[in-house]
Length: 157
Image 1: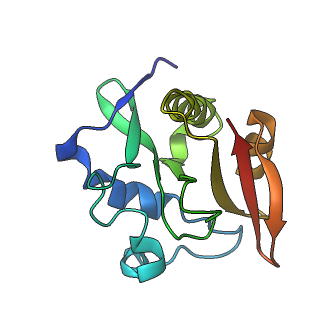
Image 2: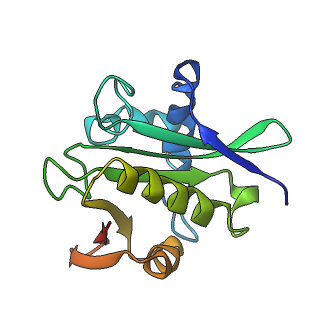
């Protein structure tokens, strides 16, 4: 599949609401939560005032001019928080574009940007049952902490 990765434009920041919702892992057999869940403070940290902070960086994936995925990072006190110098990842693709390598490419592109901007590491939190755990490990993230439901993962740049 032909796709392009590019930096998100300021006028596209509102799209992050959709991709934040898409990033919510829904275990098999469970129904998806209402979209209003993204208004909870613990999720709003991923998108509120995006682009206003020094560490806010976003990339989009496009297929035939249609935006189908996003990866973004910011230094925030989220589920994957390590410290105030470590950006945390958020990534998602629309369901029909998952499993095609696009997410891996998005992640790798963002890791290159972070390295070029001289960040030392990046983090993320992922539910243990999420199939994306394998992708993160394959890319080079390490599990540095966990709780009953989630892994906290770190990538050293």
